Length: 357
Image 1: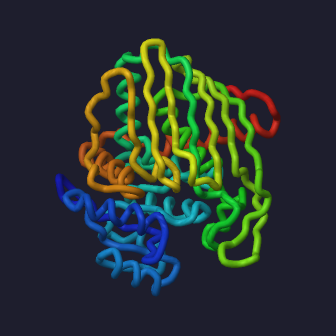
Image 2: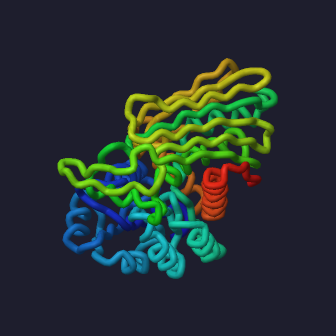
Image 3: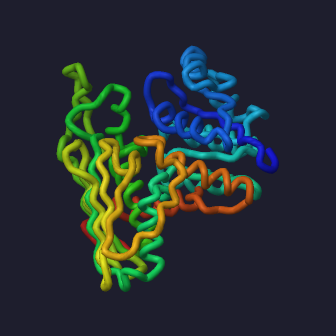
């Protein structure tokens, strides 16, 4: 791929009936038809892949994800499968010299994230799907802070609810209850929120935390079957940041009645972000309010709503990075750092002791 030619994308983890690839990535790529073309999709069987090809308009379909990763007609491999499957696909794509967009979390643990980050070679762009950092309102909030309009930052209060990790769930989400899979309330809902917090008020330098299982069993929707929950469904984090700001974060699972709230106070003013998407704030539009001047929104996907909105914003920035060899979107090094931060939070919760980050 050279110059302004279309970036030929392949989605690993396509499904015509459900999933983040169908709900977010496919409509985002369609919207950005001057930057990307969907060259291929893959799924766990050829039958599902063929159906996904018809539904998405992709050119080719693979029942083998590693074959897609090695396809010479693909420039960018999009990894949207379950977290335990990320490592094999990402490493195959990087070994084949492909750019990679991998959904967050990058791996099941820090060691996997470090291995994948180390496999990125010069000339390759690898981004992690922390799309909230590309959300227009989050970028506006960060710009306000960086301008100095709020003065010295004092305190941040964040409430981050999600419908996931509630009393029941469809069978295909049962794996999210097993901490060993690395796809949990702490890593997904918590990780997305932590990344947005750091984008606005700076990196955490110290954390205290409590991760709690309030509902030890989850019922499979439409059945009487239950699965044991080994990951938290509620997380509270008290933090201090390199900006001097102190923050309080509460991540609440199993609720659709509370809106996302991000309330920041500085010595000269305040700002507030709100949102209401049931899948978590990163999956929908956010509204920004402040008593200081708000810079213009950097939005390019304002006519999209729901899951594809912030993903499309990420894709626009990623295309520009690939073409200009710049690095403005979160990369695998950012994913490693966030994975380590989550480990510090887990240690703080397990030991009851504050952790230096």
